[in-house]
Image (cartoon, rainbow, N blue to C red; front, side, top):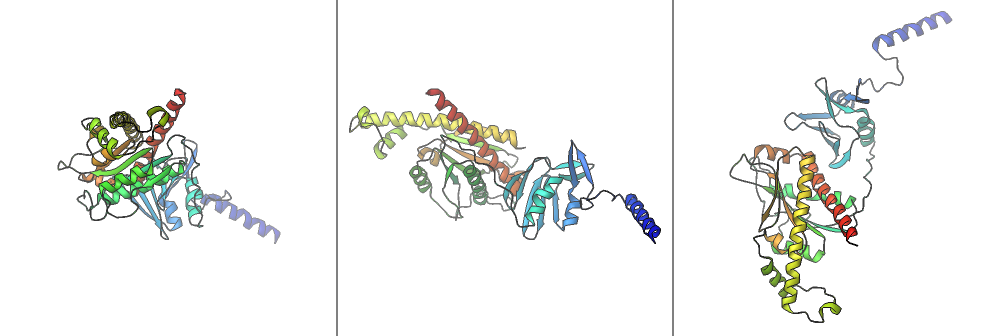
Length: 362
């Protein structure tokens, strides 16, 4: 009897060895592929094993995973994963190996296994930015004003609000207070937007928009600041007559003249324009570095909201809804998250350099 049992053990071992299953424990019978010293697994095989619905868009190289009301968005070549709309960064990128989409094995253990146990990935650490304490985010249009509309029906007001909400979360994670001009699909006049921004006493104003043009081949992201053609002296006189300045009475007297106040406002507007240009350059640089999209640069324009705000401000046109390819990109939550992250990176770089320059002046 003992020899029979031993023989069965030997037979079973040989059978398992023939089937490739002698290593214990197995990784749920998923083959692994070593790429650059990192274990990867086939995403199709993983989804088959987990019962996850997978959709792959070859044009944008984006992947959508769906199961039990949960959604995960990925893109080949990137480390960003949107888990139920929230950003989580992987340590290694999604890749293509031997013609198939593969994911790091840790994606299974740290995302899928965790998600379907109703846990949630950790949020990133707070990185305080000293001088930039408050930012106004203005999602353009809203309510009965849809803004531009793409050929497939994508509305600018919806794109603006979604990107603004994502940027809000990112900046708050950086330790920055955020004032949202609108948080839902409501109409807010330009005058009211300016009033909200100015009452907030924020350090920066960021207006989010999407572009449109009759020339449907036009595409790309561009950033606007208040045009140099807008007279600072005229704006200064208006502000001097209508807006109080908190001046040091020991230096300017108890009742500074209208002319003096106009001169001070002129200096403020000139400084704000220069800071807006610098901020716009940082945002363009971050987008150019992080996104596979055309950057049309930073330009001056006489936008009403930029003329009225009392802080450095930029208006970002994130893409052209009139361009079929960009409308299709902007439909994708993954791409909208990337835009928000690039804007946040531009603001963060601006804030760090601003802090360093202020320190150098002391």
